[in-house]
Image (cartoon, rainbow, N blue to C red; front, side, top):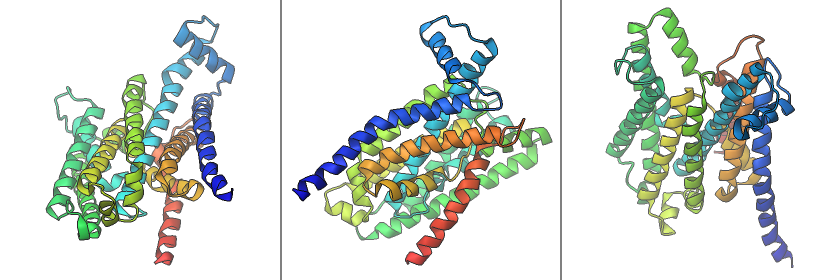
Length: 355
């Protein structure tokens, strides 16, 4: 009897979690749309949505309608997508590399995106035919490709008894790639940027949701959902990788294929998010650790919980960035860093004591 209860309790928890997830996300998005320098009542938000989606014809102030539909709602949704995508990437990298300090920017993607954005906006690459987001995405892809080639040359593609060396090669390749592209970014800014251009690009590099529009949501939402589906599909493989590549191989998992597919898919998700909103750090580092403490290490729960928590966390950070300084919007990366840096220190100290 006790054994039966033990089996049923996780199932009941999963069903409750499944039902609560849409409600929690909806509440977070509504909060992100309502809270700001100009508070918008919930009934006004609902009327605007009804007018836009179904042509209900409610009488709503045009300024409030513009704030809700053209600015805050799309911004809150994309913030949730970015938070979920970055948190999922952190879950995957920490499992595959068996490194508690691994996060999405470990692969040099953020640095590459920054270089691509600077090359387009300051150096004029593309002669005006390439947008900032497209340039950032291209730079992220180039950086990831370089990291993959460098890691492969160092032997990271091998499995078997060299799983630790493989993970170490990926980490070192990511660090090298990040340093290279950060140096290129600094060189382009120092050589070609005016004071005003340098200020604008630095604001973007720290994470900026101010320019988000519905076109960005159309790109970001499918990317986040695709990342979630990939992680859920490989949740058992992620459980196996937690104990090392050798253990995963002994269970019949194709280590090289699954690792390559998971890292590539998470790199693409991160590249999409960074290309739209800039570099937002610590989400992929802090959220997976917090969720492991709450729901455990099984990826069946951890993947969904991390995606939800990442979405809510970044929406909350965006709200704080808009209200913490009256009349001014802070880069969202500043807020996440103020929260994430102490968490990073705690993880580092706990990891050192555990060894």
